[in-house]
Amino acid sequence: MTDDVHHGVKTIQIHAKTSYPIVSAYEFEFLKSEAEIQAILKPCTIYFILQRPLLYFQNVRMENGDITFEITDDSSTASLRCTFDPRLNGFGGFGEELLIDVQFYKKVPDTQPPFNDVAALKILNVDKNFLGWFSPAKFLYECLSGHIQAEIQGQIDAYLDYTVHYIGKSFSQDIWDRLTGHHKMQRILTLEESMSSKRARAPFEISLMMLDIDGFDEANIFPFFDFCLAPGIEPIVHEFRSDDDGESFSSYYAPKLDPRAPELTSEVEGMLVSTFKPKYNEVLFDNYPYLSKGTRSAGYTQSRLLIERMPAILRTEHHTQELVLPSEA
Image (tube, rainbow, N blue to C red; front, side, top):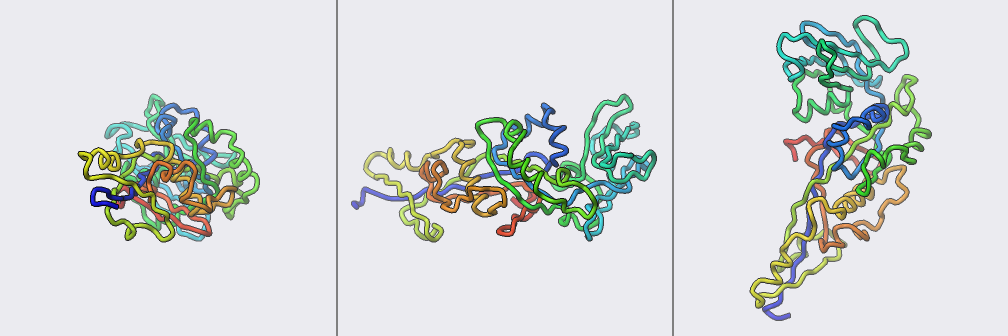
């Protein structure tokens, strides 16, 4: 090597976030036909199939303009006691009369408060125009993301814990099309038993979370780079010269991928699956990070994932991903 020839490596940090609350398979059947929701989730390319004991609203009342309720799942954890003012959060003007449409899990609904075994609350104005809706999971997501304000008393983290059954990707077709009739989803719905102490069936407990990969940062490390590489990682060495007016250095320094390149999705899929090792993933990417179409194929020696927003705790017996709120990213 001469003084004119230099060597360096490139590393990449991929950014990802949730763009919409975790939805149950029950909710998915209704939401998949909503154009607005489809537009929000269209950029998402990674999806998780999850399960937790069924969340539902209990003791729902409308008093003095507030909606009060508890969120529970029949576990030993104390229920969350919540107070929510719809008008304070932009659902109608102050003093405006609102209608609350209560959706039940049970076949025979309550006809007067308190309402129990409630799956969702729809907010409408007196003309019955739809203003918004909340399931328990959506309510917690919107509160933790800072989109709405509410008073919540209790241990919130205990209601954000999900078991990961499957992780997949979809960038060649809409994620809605990918998930409709998904054979892994059908197998999980068939084989997984209810986690709830009640007779709720697993189809109500199975949920979906979608991840949007929306960009990356990269580091160009030279002339020394061994110090920054994880053990066992084979460096992809880039060569550039100091006697070509910066042409080769510019080529080395330039990003090798677009912000939403498919290699990013493939990398995140391999990273997550090899880490969580979900029960229903047949391919566990044991050779990660050596993937055929990951970021190494674009010249990046190693990658890491920065999750900017994930208001849930995801776990398998192999790994736990803790709660990530926007201010913590």
